[in-house]
Image (cartoon, rainbow, N blue to C red; front, side, top):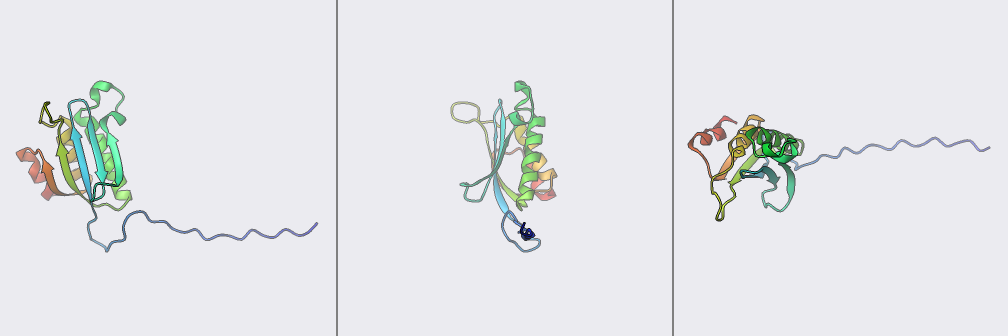
Length: 144
C-alpha cells in the first residue's frame, strides 16, 4: 500500500459582517416601527430602505394572540432587533414610527413607546424620529 498523504490544513478566513468604519463612528440604519392595536413590527433596513437587516414582531415573541400588541412583546422584539443590529455593526438608528392610518386610527398602538424605549436602553443611538411622538419620548434621543 502506498503511504497516505497528510491533509493540508486550510487557513480559515475571518468574515466580518457590516461596513468597515473608523473607531467611534456611527453606522446608521432605519428602524420602521409599525404599532397597531393587534401587533407591533420592528423592522430595520439600510438607509435606502431597500435592504432588510432585521424584522421582528410582537407575535414572534409571545404565544398568546392577545399579547401580540402588548408593550412587553414590543420590548422583547426591539431587544432582539438591537442585538442583531449590534452584531452587524449598526450603532445608530433613524426611527420611523407609524400607526394603522387610513380610515382607521392614526394613534400608534401600545407597543410603540416601549419599543422605542427598549431600543434606546439597549445602547442604540437614536437619531431623527419621523412620525407620531408624545412629548415625553423626545428626551430618549439624548439619553443614548
